[in-house]
Length: 515
Image 1: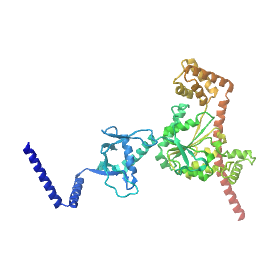
Image 2: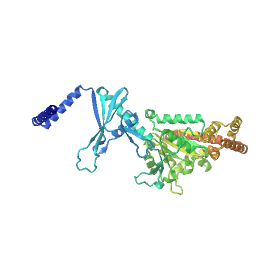
Image 3: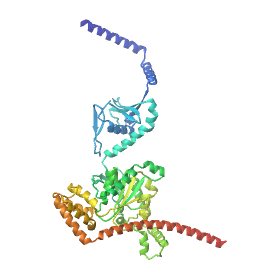
Image 4: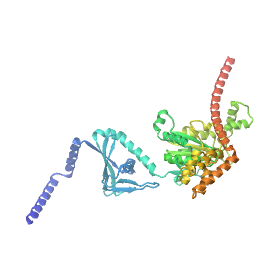
C-alpha cells in the first residue's frame, strides 16, 4: 500500500513538471489558437450547429430569451429532473421552467432540436450605470446543419408567436376606462385599468343556442383570420351592434366575448372625450387583441339620426333635404354632432372615422361593440357594414334561454313534473320577461328548487295575461326599425351617387348653353 501511494505521488510530480514545461514552451496565446483550431476542425466534421441566446444583449433585455423561456415552460412536460416555478405579475397561472444547466429536446416540422439552459458566474464587473446580474444566463440551441434554414426562418418566429399567446392566456385580462376629462395617469396613459373578473361565458349566457353558435363561429373566424384580412386588403377589425330592451344581457354578451377570445376590454365613455382629436388619441393608445365598447351610444352624446332630424325640421322632401340638413349640421357642429352643455364637440364624422376610417387600422385584431336600447335613434351611417358588421338582437327570455337559466341557478335540466314544463313553455313567449327578471326570481328562491319553479310559473302566467303580446310587438318594431335604418343608409348612398350624376349633367348643359 505504501508503494502504491509513493508511485502516485511520483506520477503527480511528473505531471506537474510536464505542465510547467508546456506552459513555458507554449504561451497562452498559442494555446488559445490551438484550442480554437481544434474547435473549428471538430465543427467541420460535426453534423450539428450551435446558437447562443443570451439573457442580456449589451444593456438591453433580449426578448428572444424571454420568449424561449416562456415557450419551453409549456413543453417542458416534466421531462427534467429539476424544474423552476415562476408566477409573473398580473398572472393567474404558475409556469414551469428549466433549471440551471438543464436541457430539453423539442421538434419542429420533423426537425429535432435540443435546448440547454446555461448559467455561469459573471466575472468582476467594471463601472456601469446599469449593474448586471451576478449570473450570466442564456440558452444554447443545437440543431442539425441541414435544418438550419428551417429553424432560422420559421421556428424562431413560431416561438415568438407561441410565447405571446401563452403570455396572453396566463395574464389576467384588464378592463380599461378613459380618464376623466382626458387626463393622463402617472405613466402618461389616458386609460385606467382594473383586473377583469367577469365570469360570463357563452355556456352560461341565456340565449338561443343556435344563435350563440353563430356568434362564436364568427368570433373564431375573426380571431384566426389574419391571413384572410391581409389577402383581401381589409383592416383586421370587426364591429358588433347589440340592441334590444334593457335587461336582455348585452353587457353579459360583451363579457362572454372577451372571455371567449381572451381579449382586454376598453370601455369608452364618450361624455369624457372633448373632441375628435382626443378620440383618435384614445384609439392610438389601445392595444391589439382588444374589444372597444361604447355602451348606450344613443344616450352618450348627440349623434342622432340625421334623416329623422330633417323630417322633423320641415325641410323639403326627398334625399336632397337629407343632405342639405346634414351639410347644415356639418357647418354648425361638424358631422351631425355639435357641442353639448358639457363642452363635448365630438362629431358624427369623427366617430365614423374612429370605427372605419384611416385611424381605425392603426392597430390590429380589434373589435368594436356598440350597445343601444333604441336602434331607431342611431344614424344609418353607424349601422352599415364595415362599421357594425353583425347586428345582434338581444330579445326577451325564450324557452331555450330559460333552460340555460334553470341549469345555471338551480342545477336542474327540467322540473320534476312534466306538466309544469309544458305550462312554462306555453306562456314564456307571451310573458315577455327579460333574462334579468327571470334570474332575479331564481336567485331569490335558489334554496328551494320546486318553489322557484312554481313562483316563476305564476309570474309568467300573470305577465302573459297582462301584457298581451306588447313585448313581442316591441321586438317586431325594433327589428323593423333596424332594417329600415340599414335600408335608409343604402338609399342615402344611392341618392348621393344619383345627385352627383345629375350635377355632372347640369354642368354639361351649362357648357352647351355657353357655346
